[in-house]
Image (cartoon, rainbow, N blue to C red; front, side, top):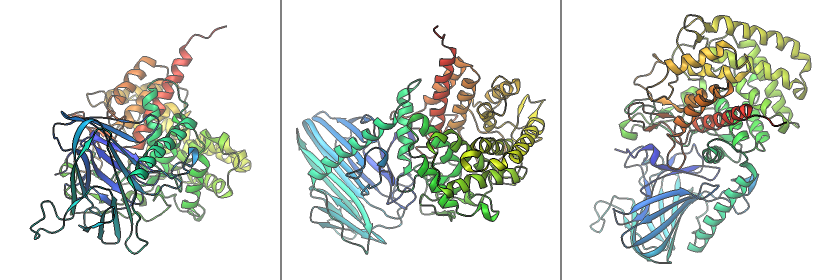
Length: 621
């Protein structure tokens, strides 16, 4: 059963796809050629679903890992009794990928480079490709400069100058390992280097060309320089948790599909929200809401130069949906695909037996009213950088405001994508209010000034409904649903929305009620309590914890905000990565990783705290 702690994984990206590498030196997750493609290594979800190991042969070797500064090149320093080995892993960036063009020409190659720094180190390499999430056990064969794997619709090539032993069939006497495995053992002396490159192509296309050890080493260095060029342009934040905010900006950029500008919610599928539960979802797609909010995070942690590309992507993906009177689809494939039908992979046992493993996401058919506000709020905050909007983008934004105005009273599945009956959620109404409010402000840029009187009337109607039907005097807070009494962490966003002044007692009451009523005992915040149509219990939601910190900061409760922010940030891995949730019993990270929403929440909360500290500081003169 696969069960390596989620926090033990490092994240690599080339702006097209991602890989996860364990502390033990095994690539246990890699989808090619895109984030949402089938995995060729999926030991993350099943021990038999493929991996790529490079590490010292000595099981007692000690690993210390880090990212090279300002990027996503992983460096692991292995210390053995006999010597020291340094391994650098990355997904290669293209020769001309620099700054804002990061990832545009990525070749789709996983690179692993090892160098013996002192003494001598015995190493082991295992290459176990299992395309289509482990369904295919390909035939492996030695080739000039490496090993080729053939099976199904793709072919994989491992470039290496190591002599590899291939285990092809259980009936072959010479086979020592699992069929379809290539393995090598070697000794590196001080100063000696080893390069490994793995790539994939369609089985019926041109033959893959191998990579030399020199090219591998040179490209690792070039990829490191490319990431630094991006950071030099983007990393401007100064304030609390500066290093984690910068790391989060890199993660958010790493979750961006460079060709289209789409931002995936996470790099993985089916890491559970609760151990042993069926709360296993595929997050390798771009949600309108998540991506819009993530763009805000990039604005703080980095810079918004990619904003126009982002809005153009959604305008093309949505096409004429809103104009035809249809609700905006809440999520798309990274290339703009619509049909994300969900299916299960019964041959995979799941992380720690948490099944089913799913690909696709059934939420694509849901109605979620909050997407309009998320889209307009992102445009509003980035308006200085959107002066020359393309006509399809203007049309999309105007139609989003109009749809929010026409449908804000209709029930939906809400931000948490409840798989049960639709309801009227306070957060959904709030986001419709934001859509109208931001649309009014953007009307000159959108060519919609003639609509502002009607938009203003509807905006005020939504506000009145939230203040009367969404507020519960007995609970002393805004609640999850109109007329309900259940708490929902999403109502914390009222504090940052502009619906009410930050010092309004109803804002403070909601903050206090959520902090008291949705705390897990560790001081982390649950999304809500009560049934949601699913079995099992989920973990505490890191995004909601950061929402609480942000709400405390904007209401000038600085010490409380700082405490909550640092508490949530304390669950980041040693590499600064966050998943979706935390197990309330064990404190272990749960859910898909790295999770854009969690990193976004940290970024925005830290920024809000920095502003609160500045407001408090005495002014000279």
